[in-house]
Image 1 (cartoon, rainbow, N blue to C red):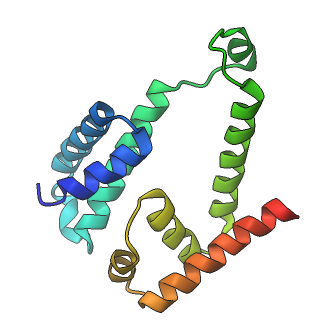
Image 2 (cartoon, rainbow, N blue to C red):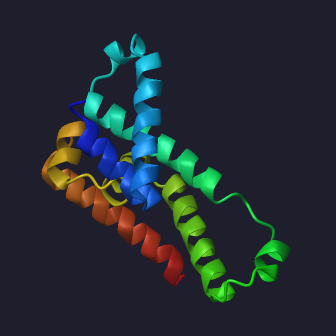
Length: 151
């Protein structure tokens, strides 16, 4: 398990729970084991395993937080600020839509940095871009996202 640490870090960022993160890594390892013949063609195993962990963590988060109707949210007596929570969800959804519309290189870099938590030098190594190019792509992606919120 040479890539366990990276997989766990990706999973813990998404799930915010150690048990769920461990489950996500375990699910990812099982899926990778089932696909081991297809792994021979992967050029960057560390990025491939991190993506597998991310996908497994997203599945766990979706199972943990099923889609709830607005009526169900309004009926809950949790006592937290419903409008604030909905505003945050809307903003996150909008940011993800903006990211999806970015050019491929910018989208890849911002997801690796801000979602997966890769370091700049790791992104440069994994993508084949220079360190300076990674910084430029990340900056342009963030500017594009900010521009959508200020317009």
